[in-house]
Image (cartoon, rainbow, N blue to C red):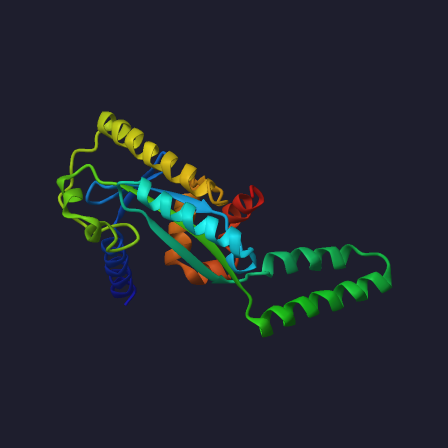
Length: 229
């Protein structure tokens, strides 16, 4: 019986690996199984509706100029997640235990309960904004925009050579695209940072393991990036 269960697990793991289009993450670059490269920017945001009409027109014009200035496709991704406050509540419970003043201890307990109930009833969501910049060294890039925007990390195709020398060359060209995107975004008030290797791995892990994310086992890097803004 244990052998059968283990066999089922191995089959499930193999199927999960086949589902992913990312082969590896290297030097801040997601390398696809078809040899394509992707760098991901985490972007800031602002409330467009609160801007004055003149500011809105200027932002739209700058955004239009930005799109017209690039000669490669990019993808904007908004990731919505239910706000996880368990790490914060755990910290407050430790503070409550260490509190010597009985009145403050009671008030801390009431505050913890209030925050927990408020978040549960309001169903508060957090949003992260990403910009995916692609570079496909293979001839598949000539297939057009649709082949690149088919999914967040592209589709499988013929894999080109990606040894150390070619990877360095491709990454240099990819960084040129990233610089152009960051400069264009900055012109209408969007700041962005390039995700590093560990942050890319965490993003991929949290994307495919939502239950772990809700338990608070992932998300440390996202907090660190948020403080950068």
